[in-house]
Length: 481
Figure 1 (cartoon, rainbow, N blue to C red):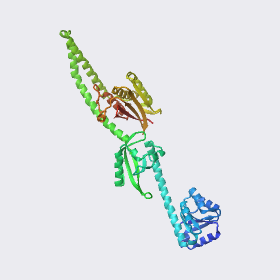
Figure 2 (cartoon, one colour; figure 1 turned 120 degrees about the horizontal axis):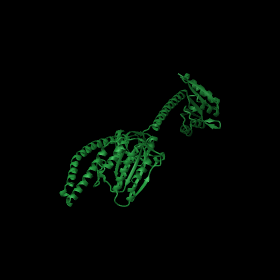
Figure 3 (cartoon, rainbow, N blue to C red; figure 1 turned 120 degrees about the vertical axis):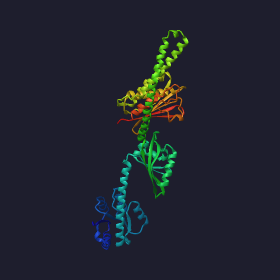
Figure 4 (cartoon, rainbow, N blue to C red; figure 1 turned 30 degrees about the vertical axis):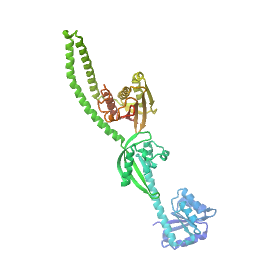
């Protein structure tokens, strides 16, 4: 067993001799090695060199005090325990020593071998435990700061004590914002927060709690929460440690897979139905041609008018069949890096005549960042044009406005196109993107179906959210890094 190196810092040689004598009376004296520094300067230099395991420091050191030495040692990061020695029992000095970080204090007149041995051993064990605790805290602090998943520390009332860097980035906060934000504001639905807290308080821990959370910019995330409750013994209150798992990308993939399946089935049915219509339609067109060449009917204005009407409607049906068949085709896409802002501007230019003709005001708030995506420019511009045309056709009353804004969040570039036209109403929220669904009297539902297919082929997602007046279409596209 290595000897415990003890340094006595005392400017009185008599005190050193007395202390040495007390050490000699300790049964386990062979475990100790006592050294002496006879001034404040020598003492602090020895402490800073960290060549001893523990220090006994006299309170009076010439013009300085043992508290001065203790304070300087603590500020220098010294971890070894320091015990203050006082000439008499002085409660204020004792408290001052402990407040400044002393491991303990001893009254010189009361020191004996047994008390000194026990004090030294206790201080060393306490220092070892404190060191292990700080190392553990450091490890967890590193994990807390470096982990890529948001971590939140809060309480029952919603007060946020701390949020790691990943959490601040996820929710779009600055550390100073945490003083004015509560964890309730992070939940999109307040009922989710109430249920989460209820489960946590009842069980003490929660795993995979599903909810929607919202960032400071209004971005919605589908998340699961894993949390445990810890009782703070000082304040006697519950502290929640919560890890937030962002499942939004996985949710997008699941939704895209479902929508792709719907499109595939609907396209197969639509194509088969269109092909079935072609044969009887061809027969009708053939009969019309025969009737047009019948000399007996050539001068019958009523018959000719009706034949023209039938012919026009047959042509319309034939055109619709072609559109249906084209919409079901999966054309190969040619992906290249494309500037998103330029794509939006090009799509607007393509429908500019409609915008001017309908006297529509277009407000734009497009990010100036030079962001790129992997895209088939022709196809993606077509999708945006379809969405813009659909918005234009929804507006009937003046003033007519279209707002286009963009957001960069969580690896996605979101394009928000909002009109103030005829709203879909919440009843249509679930089926508006169903293939070939339309609320327009003469609509075929193909424009948004085609736009949805193009966006999904770009690993993106399209959402339609009915507003109080008009509709909001959100196109989310992954950013190319």
